[in-house]
Image (cartoon, rainbow, N blue to C red; front, side, top):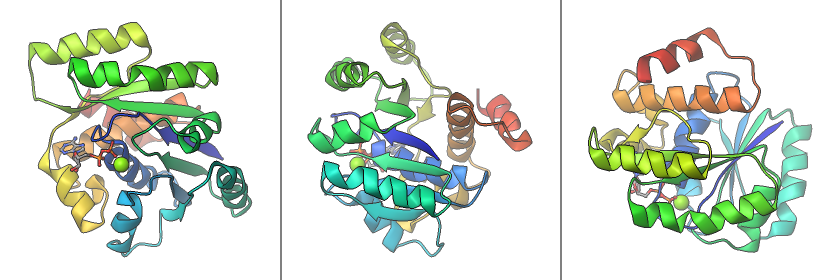
Length: 220
Ligand SMILES: Nc1ncnc2c1ncn2[C@@H]1O[C@H](COP(=O)(O)OP(=O)(O)O)[C@@H](O)[C@H]1O
Ligand SMILES: [Mg+2]
């Protein structure tokens, strides 16, 4: 089972939105996808309440000691991907979610304050010797600010592609209990999330599927 953790102590950077969007994009690969909600704010469980589909299944954890048994149970049930959504703080639960990850994704909006705020998370990930990548989220369609942000993040570590633009589909999908690729399958937000999923799948070491290679070409 692969474990992907969305983590940064900066609130509002898009951890929950990307966790939901990526989990649904991953369902095209195979259906046994799980989300683990490690944030008492409950964005993912509220999203799941609005959702009719069985997958992704959602498990909540409130204590670091719960993470390993939940992952073990999911793996025993045949889950092939678990995505952990974490709170906006570097607490012991976030540290455990990092420690269990095959890959950590650190979302950041393209502003110096957001990028600086990601650094304590980056230090924690490096201490735990986990693989990680930044993902630029809520980007404007174009502009110098974007390339400055991409350059800063590239100097700190790997930057996942493509950038995820600021688009209403993400907010509307979350409100409807859907992944953005279910909410507006032919939209740009869906193309970007599908391509980001393909990037993640590749960096987790999965064999790419044909439609995933196409998704990367379209959105990059
Ligand atoms: N790419 C995006 N485009 C538009 N809105 C977004 C995007 N990513 C996140 N949001 C919105 O920004 C807010 C914060 O996102 P959220 O995923 O809750 O952040 P976090 O989990 O890191 O605190 C939410 O209202 C969410 O819908
Ligand atoms: Mg959140």
